[in-house]
Image (cartoon, rainbow, N blue to C red):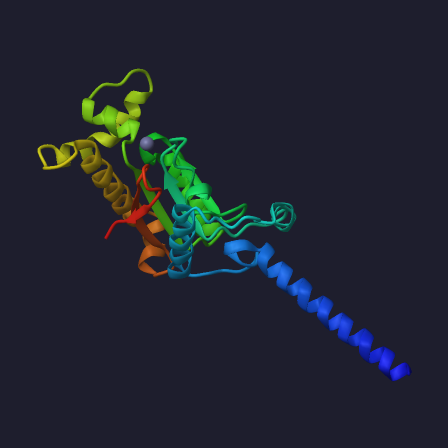
Length: 227
Ligand SMILES: [Zn+2]
């Protein structure tokens, strides 16, 4: 009798442990466990899959935010650095269907990266060991439109100046001038980050950091990965 009861109790305990483990796995969300470290290819696959869920209108309904918040109190290990425009329509956690602790985000109008932005990126790449950077431009970017028009007031001029080389490089090309400049600007920022001394270039050469470019389509919600 005692043996049977012990067996039942043991079985119940096993079921509880299994259920709890399953729950914890889901709670960790697309990023997996908090302490998990992944390579660039896995990180990029997660971004790709998350964007596909966003486009399809099938986001993960419950990201276990309260539990995730508790897991992240003392530590973080975001699996991607996103350098994107400040535009309200391009929120990275939304368009990649991700949650707390997944992304380290640097946003400025026109995805311009200055020394302060670079310092932020270096912090994540070097100290948080985040394995990839995505420079995310977008369709009909206001800052790039201003740079193409050559008109800006106040401190917006600083953004326009930073984007101007991309505008000059694509002037006269067939197609939409803003779209061309957005793509050129993304590629320029990718190249700049890959070569950036003293931190990022070394990580890229060592194969522990990948920098890629992408453009977000406002109409479809799709992120197009640039070759
Ligand atoms: Zn923009």
